[in-house]
Image 1 (cartoon, helix red, strand yellow):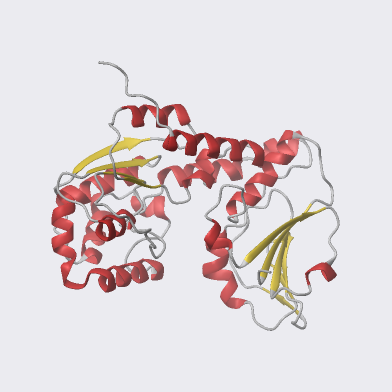
Image 2: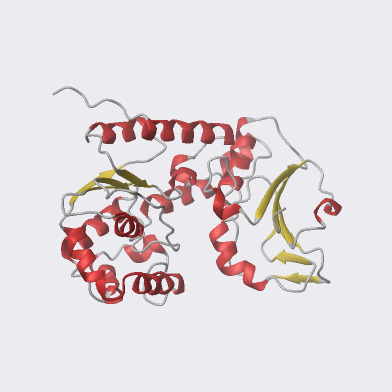
Length: 340
């Protein structure tokens, strides 16, 4: 059994499409969906219940209890909230009663001193859903403009037996470089950058075409001068002083050492293509696949794009799962290239 639990309490369930949509938002934002990156959730069990009985969760280190419609981002929890969980039994949040954390072995009640206000899509009825759905739209817009000028996790590439001839990647920093380095590639390797974020693609293209591979922190400073809207789109993330950014860059230095510049120059010589696409739109994705031949050794790094808001707005969990299956089928069985 995992050591942590995430519990959605349906104490006033509604048999409506908008209630199911609000529930899906809660699931997706806490890495809780049927088409997830399963390894990341090895420490977590996920539950839904109509009546919360805490005695059922006594064996867990702690449980997060929330209501459908609360948008509780996993990354924010992991980075900001979890370090403050220590010896209390109950942890309350200052701006909401819709979510709390319970630690069976703790004692007393603490209010977590955080400034974040959890967005909430209220599924009580059609009017409350409509009036509060702007929370989801706000996340949609932020996801669609976010520029991952660095990746936000430590890469763990799979082993490949042959060098990569064709690659597709979201524009999430340098994750694809780990894959290419471990598998092998050359200047003829084709790299397709696909993302819903126009700003992320623009920054990625500019970086590949202009950065000399030296002192990426200095290059980041330049990017934020060159593209002033990055400060708005990224909300303080992925820049000098952002701790996760420094951790990622330190790992890159550990990975490549003095060989990074050589790797980068070879990577710049690859054939790079840039495509704007929402992975929730399988037809648009298929059009991109139709433009390229099938190669013997191909890779695709799409990170958590399937569960981000742009691909799931106004979808129930079942619809999100069906869409993810269509997306994966498109990769496994790409459409034939049209005749000229």
